[in-house]
Amino acid sequence: MAKTFKNFIGGKWIAPSTGRYFVNRNPADTHDVIGRFPDSGPADIAAAVRAAQAGFEQWSRTPAPLRGEVLRRVGDLLAARRDEIADAMTREMGKVLAETRGDVQEGIDTAYYAATEGRRLFGRTVPSELRRKWAMSIRRPIGVCGLITPFNFPMAIPTWKAFPALLCGNSVILKPSEDVPHTAHLLVEILLDAGLPEQVIQLVHGADTAGRALVEHPGVPVISFTGSTATGSAIGQVCGRMHKRLSLEMGGKNAMIVMEDADLALALDGVLWGAFGTTGQRCTATSRLIIHRKVHDRFVARLVDAANKLVLGDGRDPRTQVGPLIHAAAREKVEQYLDPVVLRDAEVACGGTRPRGARTANGFFYRPTVIVDVKPGSRLATEEIFGPVLSVIRVSSYEQAAKVNNEVKYGLSSSIYTSNVNLAFRAMEDLQNGITYVNAPTIGAEAHLPFGGVKQTGNGHREGGWEVFDFYSETKVCYVDYSGSLQRAQIDTYDV
Ligand code: UN1
Image (cartoon, rainbow, N blue to C red; front, side, top):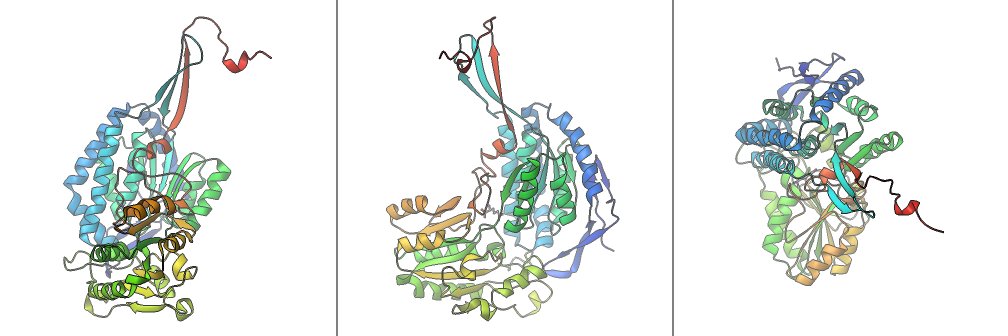
């Protein structure tokens, strides 16, 4: 009998008010059941908000350096349990152990970064217009933050959101993806072990009903969401109506540009990792290869050869290089793009089918797929697939490559392989993305730099780095007049 997990609300592990549960299975072997998790409803969210408001009263008054100390201990505990958490993460979402260890490492880095920020959280002092008067800004906590996180980075993304939110003095309600509830459970255990006051963190499992109740609750002034553009739009409408602060990280259709003067061996390693790492299930995944016609045929031949050799299987098997997709619907979505009606004149150079054999028989596997002769503007060239599918587009110049890169509604990451330094710098300006890599693939952003995209990928906020602390805090301005008499500001003494 599979283990039954609970929500963490009001300082206790409790069953959902709905009495309903969903089953969490290993996507590499659907016979392997990890556990049953709460399918929560609005009453669970309401209870979590009440508790989080009480937690906020306490935590917002705790000095920021002490809040940072708790996060430092969180980093220490994550580091001590890294391999065990990575194993559990691979079991519930499929990516290989090297990647899930990296996912936990991103959480560790984010914890230590936030910990040190507790001793900064700078405000500013600026000169006043008037004598004997000080003018300054400070940072204040906001309240309860509702965090809705995806399956592909089960530890890193919750920590990107929760740690800066906590460091700034807010309390947190985490609603993780229903595909990766176990990793979220482990994270909350660690937060509590590190000494976070128990009302400050609430964990509410569930699907859309729980997520919607969180977004619509008037007691949650801050929402941060990573996921699809369609869901992000729906959340944006509610938050706009309710005047909530909202950070959105959504889709991508990221391109790697390979110019004729590129180091092709380097670019080959880059595209294999960018397109097929995490089975293509990253917002930053390399989904398009925009390649100069002079090197196209040579490069594609080597790419197809290497992609065919990638070993599929359970991510906990050390031989495995590519794990499964997250669930049946994700694989069916990939398969839709292989329909002849969608392919039209494009040609499948490798992959394009489910694999055969015992290693992959019980999971949602799909072969690494390269599609050539993709036309700019077609569905394969513009839509996010979120699977191991690479669309190859042939171009004749840098100008054309940059234009094709920019011809999509998304703008997360891009990359250019070239040995021409002038072109590299031009690309950094021309490519309409939140992140551009030179001679590196489109994935692999570092935890201490701002992360996010332009256009339909986001709504102008960034996660990570120094900028995220602005999102999770309110700027407050204070004036201190120590002149002893009424001094009117310049605008109030203007002489007509
Ligand atoms: C995501 O896919 O949502 O840059 C985040 C990267 C990772 C983060 C990806 N550090 O590839």
